[in-house]
Image (cartoon, rainbow, N blue to C red; front, side, top):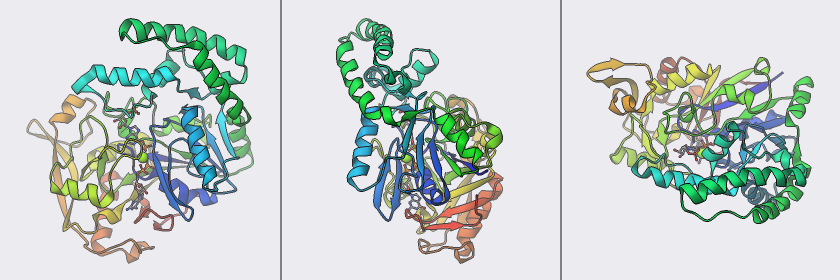
Length: 427
Ligand code: GDP
Ligand code: IMO
Ligand code: MG
């Protein structure tokens, strides 16, 4: 009964797409359970390089059913573009399924995301401006519109009319903007309804069937634990939970069926958008990591903030998710470093702390305390087994395992599927 959750353990962009694409060779279902098109998952495989936003990263295998679960906020225009691009490149997307309970990103969500960020000025979150926050806010405020609503156009129109009246009051009275047209949005979403109706279904039933038949299911996380609304650097985070709890909630798979939880960490730290990042390097080392690793946002193209591995945050992420094992990605990025550093604690107001604090005001005052290890200074992109790794690279991995408190079962040394050291078969 393999149900494996793959969870981002930092601030996103850990290489989840690569790991899922690699593991999906042996899976039957790959399920996205959170986020939306704020995610950008890069997959490099024999078909080329792909940047997936909503489509699960298992789509390249003919035997895999790709499920967009109820926990995802879906922009159907983006999904349409993505599916068209995949189709144009010869990828069969006919096995995509979309949860009838998934919330839809509506035009006013995107407008409001922009207006809210603008209003925050220098205190802006630095969102991807995809309407994610407003869409998840509407979900819990009980004024969202779900994929299943599109299946009955009369019901959809009524629902849209009610919600739009409220949104137009907000747009015109709070922000002095023009109201949006019910007819235009309705007409546009009717086009989407016609296209997506064959894909919309009760995906919880689909997955229950998979579990009953003992078929392998991968739950593909989006974003990372440090962006979680509860456990991340609130309010500098995203609006749906990237942690393992939501792998169940956002897919409808009961927790008792999870067989393995894999945390994905990159071998250093990055962050895109605002908010504190204690190990950020604003010097030439940070610049060097950015350039070697081409650390620019998949979705927004923004330069990612780079720094040394933060083991304080990493241990916290492991505790919150209860990882069974971890994947360390992008180890090759550090190949040319004379020394590598790991943050093992923070200095806060003259005292050493080793627990990740809850408040951003506190985190901003934390100064990293580093441990330094010698670099390995040789290319590892061709290494396929742990014992072939240079001694210093193994020492680095061992220290990360010790500090995080979890075994590194996968080590990734390049973008391609096969550039992975597999130390344990997860299923
Ligand atoms: P995700 O959002 O977690 O899927 O990660 P992104 O795709 O946004 O960013 C990770 C980047 O690292 C992508 O460009 C991947 O192709 C790349 N990548 C993943 N693993 C490795 C690795 O081991 N080495 C190198 N050099 N690049 C990797
Ligand atoms: P993947 O799945 C990195 C960040 C944004 C911003 C904050 C809130 O590729 O790892 P949002 O648009 O979600 O309201 O933005 O969250 N963010 C990500 N950073 N990787 C992601 O996804 C992200 N998704 C959102 O930069 O700081
Ligand atoms: Mg990404």
